[in-house]
Length: 234
Image 1 (tube, one colour):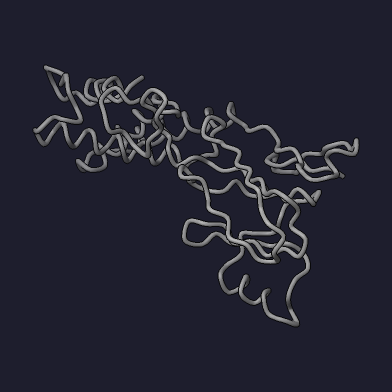
Image 2: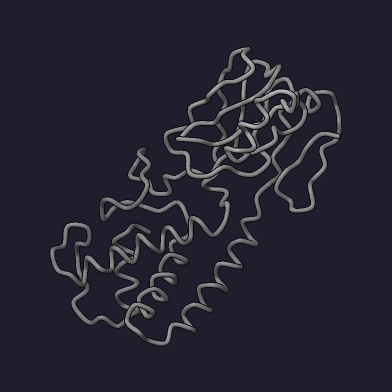
């Protein structure tokens, strides 16, 4: 479903009357533009509600040998998937992200840590590691959940743009947002959205992330952590 289809579905569900608009992004009337803004906000709600498999990305970058390095994050970086920053020289995830205060403290003797740590700062990953190896790999949720052919975008910019997440969830979230903004009873709409979201999250349960360090290559059996989000070698 495109933005146009999602907005048209919402328009009918909300009972906004005929005729249903044929254009959305470029429309000049306030009612249509308001629907587009509800769609954009609902998209953000759905994207932030779960680590959807369709939004997961893997990023690997070569690193040097220095004890402290700054790694630029991908241009579509949205948020980090916890426990998924790995160094090629290690069998375990790198500890982090740390706060600025924690990271700076570990740079100073005598508390300097020999165990690799990282923080996310100013669109980059700062790494503190005595022996970092040759590459760093991380898993993240893309901040570009909309596609226009081969191009990905942060949000809808054209009526033909398509979301990578379930657009039924977007439409249900739009209804709840619209009713709340109008001062109408939004409870039933919110419950419907919450129930649909819970089902979608359960069906989308992400696969474990395999260990990328040496231990993963030595025939050791992977094991899932209790939250089901990470698999590491033992």
